Amino acid sequence: MTSDLYREQILDHYKNPHNFGELDDADVAQEGDNPLCGDVITLYLKLDDGKLSRATFRGRGCAISQASASMLTDMIVGKPIEELKHFPSQAVLDELGVPISPARMKCATLAVNTLRVALNGGSGGDDDD
Amino acid sequence: MIETRSLDVTAIREDFPILDRVINGKPLVYLDSAATSQKPRAVIDTMTDYYCRYNANPHRGVYQISEEATAAYESARRRVATFINAPSPKEIIFTRNVTEAINLVRYSWGRTNVHQGDRILLTQMEHHSNLVPWQLLAAEVGAQLDFLLIDDRGRLILDDLATKVTGARLVALTHQSNTLGTINPVKEIARAAHQAGALVLVDGAQAVPHMPVDVRDLDVDFYGFSGHKMCGPTGIGVLWARRSLLEAMPPFLGGGDMIKKVTLEHATWNDLPWKFEAGTPAVAEGIGLGAAVDYLCGIGMDRIRAHERTLLDYALEKLQDVPQITVYGPQDPDVHGGAVSFSLPDIHPHDLATLIDQEGIAVRAGHHCTQPLMERLGVPATTRASFYLYNRQDEVDQLVDAIVRAQKVFA
Image 1 (cartoon, rainbow over the protein chains, first blue to last red):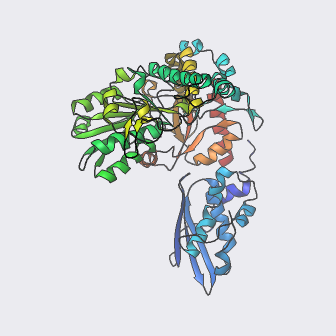
Image 2: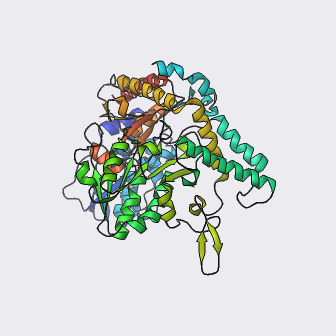
Image 3: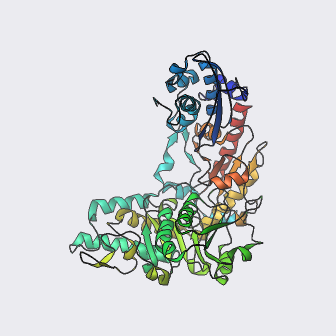
């Protein structure tokens, strides 16, 4: 079976997620879930001097949700918090690099939505979805 | 096996235009009939014919096409009554779907008859449609919910049935689980409930499309189902209830059609069944449901059940060939309808469903609107394949082959 969606990079992130695990000295721990699929993640963020110094996650769910969380934690470290408050979903979609169907969009954007909720509070702030 | 041959699936498939579709270069393999069934040309044509030739508001028009629309709509009601062996078409209330049917009972019967401290007995396998309305009613009137639990094979545990029905006002349960496929012993439970003085409501959304259902034989009090799962259109469902109950119940929705006489201050109610049907009804959908009933009767519900039983038996056997698979629900096809849920340790159901969709195979992945049941099974979601009269054995083979290929992608 050939599968564009399940290309090697996504499966790699799913099977061997980067930055996986709890962060003991996290400043923010934010849970997010996608009730439709049962995908859940918790993002752990360490903030230093207005920047994000570390990001890890724990979670379970489909390959798209978990791989995108893994990719996101790679992408955001070192960036200013103010910038991350408006971090665009499109950046994660670009990193996934494959077309995401409407039915799977919530899986792909779970982590980035959770990031915005973590940094903006309940509303999640700007969402460019 | 003999029953399968007696159902001419090749001919049946020709009745369903959608089965000609090609998805991702492959013929559509539709294994999601538990969510909604496909529609035969007879139903589509009947609805088109209504819109093309006699579209009119029924019941009060004095001109010809309104009379035709009324006749067709009320004829559909009579055929639905016969289909489930209801004593009278006056007991057939058309609703949007089974969810609305259950909510009708919640508002109309429930608010009048369920009081503080009363108990409503449900089961652990209910679809949210037969759980959330009772949670809302219980919160409103101060009633309590109790549940019949399931065993590891997805069958109701009935050892404590007599205890649990004692003191209950209502027992509400599904006839067939949409997630597990379990066919529940409704008659036995109804008998116990009645002995304890409780009424019985059955969610028949997964049963009426797939097996002969006789509400008199089941001896229940309320029975609801949805048209779109039984070859009919969306937007039409049925509540059947005993006439004495319906007569005593206050109206559900108020408006036109459900009244007899209205003054500025007061109104009196129309006769059954119209007392419960406010506003212009879903005329085309009702007539379409009548055509669906005719279509199913023409094939025979016992033969449809036998066909699905054979497919399910075959699927249960074939799925065992998939490494590491967990298959849920009873292994005995006598108590397992044509829907089977399963999970794989390394592939999330949504990934599996996406992968096999690329081969044109439509299955459902998720919690199937049964989150408490998922909790009981210890999984966030399952993949479900469900069968109907138009499915073939080789479609089960295609499903199993596609699952094995998906496993290789994730290996």
